[in-house]
Length: 274
Image 1: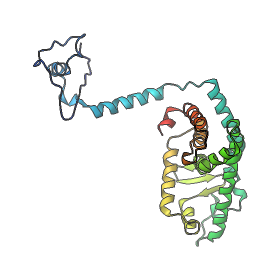
Image 2 (image 1 turned 45 degrees about the horizontal axis):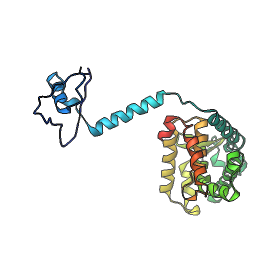
Image 3 (image 1 turned 90 degrees about the horizontal axis):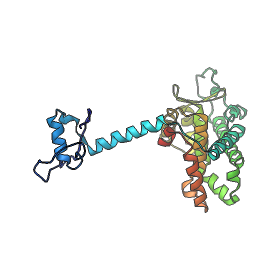
Image 4 (image 1 turned 60 degrees about the horizontal axis):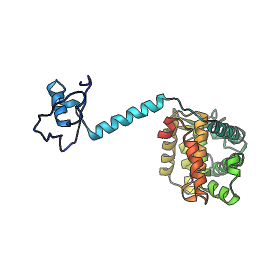
């Protein structure tokens, strides 16, 4: 009649009370009729008071149990979702998959090379600023090519495509850039090049952003990298960013919401939690 691992939930301020002065019969069929008598019978049977959970603690335990069940349940994809993922992965491979190895083409300063011996004095800032400007422009262009390779994106009017890209291009760049972030060194490893937070700090006065911004940015990349996402999950996150641009949401709101929901349902439970 009583579960072996009985736990009872009571309010923090007011416990359950019996309207019949504790005279209710507690049986297998009627045990839910009076929580107060049921709790008292459990205590009489030897249940410890420290086993009683508050409503908040019980809700937290149930949420954790639901999360574990979701993680253990394999994601079942429809044919439409599988086709969407194949399309996204194909566009990613063609335009963004190898773009970081191409950073070396944009006149990187010598100290960025991984095997370069550090100089006793700092190198000039201007070449580093120029390099950063070039690679950022290159990344945005590759993101545009990626989106133009998606039939679902090309089906939108050109003004809506521009609006979506304005809202999501930088976010997509950082989502994809996260694949190069090394948790051990806290550096970005792009082919033979290595970018550190010190490199960003050196150009901060020139480009106009604060060091605090860099610290938050590197913290974001560290947090995202700890999720150990696979390539399809990164690509789906990028697609989510594209069709969820916030204030830049174009006129066909229903189209974007439907597309975002389809993409979100394709993500693994761990990615959805993030």
